[in-house]
Length: 498
Ligand code: NAP
Image 1 (cartoon, rainbow, N blue to C red):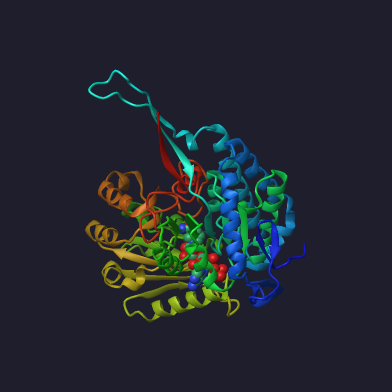
Image 2: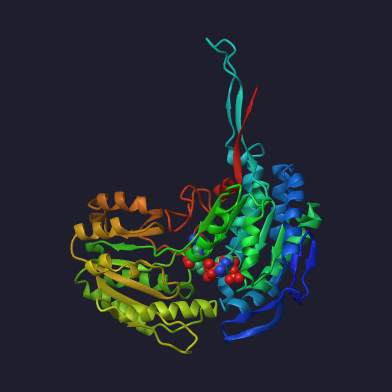
């Protein structure tokens, strides 16, 4: 499938290179790819937000059933892209084919889950409508009839992440949730997979035409120039932002949003170190098994998951567990990371850790190519961890830190000092867990998802999922970016009286 390198604005493909161009990158070859992608200009972006505003007036009147058909139709057109989509994404990300097949299916099912939720509750999102009957006899004042329902907010800007080119990108959870809510979407495509974004935009355009939706209901803009991202979130027509990515970029976009005349919600899904707490009996009785599970989970996607377990809290003296970790890590073979920027940051953070006096390198994977990232597991005492803020940062890539605790009291000190996390797991035998109530009680206030005896990687898409967490893992603790509840982010309550 030949790519145009253009942006989709109000049903038109725009961009000829007048605002500069960029190339996608092949992580496998460590070279730029040949296709040119054209930066969108300020005028074209303004056209996209105006078209989204116009489309909103029409799209917000669609029934839930019509929106459900639209979402299903998008899902069908994604599948119709066939292996061309998978091949393009593999070229741009070097993620394994099987992983991409799975993520594509998850993305398609996510669109269908929103469609089903809309059909099941055709009068209000997730059946949340509330009615209070009138009581004209109430004294001293009659009680009015009131109904609480929900309206879409308006056009939504979406920024995807590099590491989930389908599930958290162009047609990922934020886009699906906003369209389900009745909001047009403008996606700032991720420059790590621009061709994937173009193909996805073709799928939406086909669905827009098939379902006779307004052309401005979806736009996809390509740009390597960050002022376009800032122009997008500053545009008065934009009424909310869905963002998946790094803490630093989220802060920059929030600074721009803070200067707007009208404040808008910014839903930033950011990084996390996902602490794994290994309780004493588990650590001694199942040392090998838990060590292997931790290593496997951390190595998934070469450590490029927002749910990757980056901090392992282990009782001091667990030699068998630590030896097994070291063996597993030393046997692991390096792989690519998604972008040269991610490689540079990873290597910089690893070097910083190597230089810390109180931190030892427990195991290091084999480095096959110098542009690859090889796994590293470090270890330090709880005291060192508590006094070294640098160790609390997410390392995006295959790295983890074992923190050895001497007592439950010390473990509690580490837990109490944790920043907000997307997830944490507590691993214990039945005996461990019956005594872990204070740990669990404290931990639940640090996380969005608390897991017992399972690894954090893999986020189920379902109604009861919560993917978000206390700051800085996300910027709005009250909502999820995964699961059908996510559509409520892009709606607001309205009360109809009488
Ligand atoms: P990123 O570098 O923050 O990129 C995210 C988006 O911000 C991209 O669209 C990027 O555009 C844009 N951007 C980058 N620099 C910018 C700037 N100076 N001004 C304005 N926009 C800018 O993040 P990433 O590398 O794609 O993703 C990795 C991070 O995402 C990790 O921290 C990971 O934990 C997190 N993540 C979180 C979740 C979650 O659900 N919580 C899921 C997946 C990933 P360009 O394409 O032009 O660079």
